[in-house]
Image 1 (cartoon, rainbow, N blue to C red):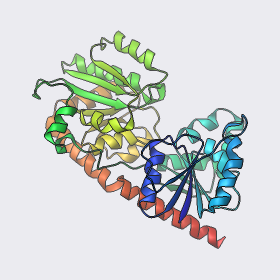
Image 2 (image 1 turned 90 degrees about the vertical axis):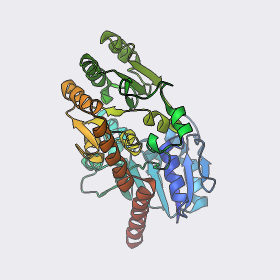
Image 3 (image 1 turned 45 degrees about the vertical axis):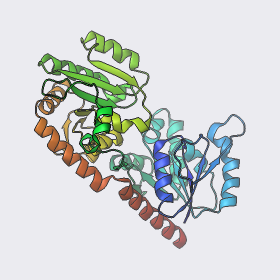
Image 4 (image 1 turned 30 degrees about the vertical axis):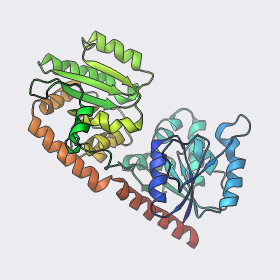
Length: 371
């Protein structure tokens, strides 16, 4: 099967998808207006689409059409229902699977009636639709009523995201937060990884950590990510007396995420809205228990009380109590971390999700041949 993968080549998710599909024997061609990240499998052919003029994605449509005419793919798989969705809407003569990722269906259509109309047009033009989660599929169906939406979640590389205990001693030493001996008096470490923006509830997390510290628990909070709220969050940390207990690491390369997560005692994400909890799953693959908000994306990927503790959104008191319950109970952290690792292996490892995508491809192509 030859697949034209129309997607942002500078996304780690894109790289993982094309690599996984290529390793299953598909002829994969990555077409993108973005420069490709390092690490694309050598069997994947990358095509740089050069926009002409100042119309963004639409300006790259002529280059896309020329590339498709040469390649003659069995399927065009476009990712992100807005930018690349606009390009996919101009494809003629090939079946198109259009995958939504998140802000393209949650934020974009709420900007104006015109944005909503544009999204609906892109969804209507596609042969088939997909999303990364069931809750997002429901959102897609608000703009494409009666359309089937396949659910194809992102995966986790369970060979890289592994528990710290499984590393060789030298690796464990490198991953250690400090050279201090690990004992019951050490400072416990809570971490989170996301864009620093209001929707992700970092203000709630800071207030919850302040309450944890008020209970006499030695704890630090480490945030991996950057964004528009960084300055406000640093000011809030100062106001809450957490200046010495919060580290703002900035955005980390994805290659450094396993080491970051392995250094944590508890992962925390208290988002007000979440379409799919990739970082929470990566933490689970590392055997790290989590405290998560009850945003739909988290409730879908976590098993409450088993792989993570779920708390109501905006609830500082419930969040601090959930954090305390794990921080004070090492055995509970270990049990939950093991359960989280098993859950990710069973449902979200890359081999598993590649299987699900291949099944969708086969279904879409079979239906296209009948129509």
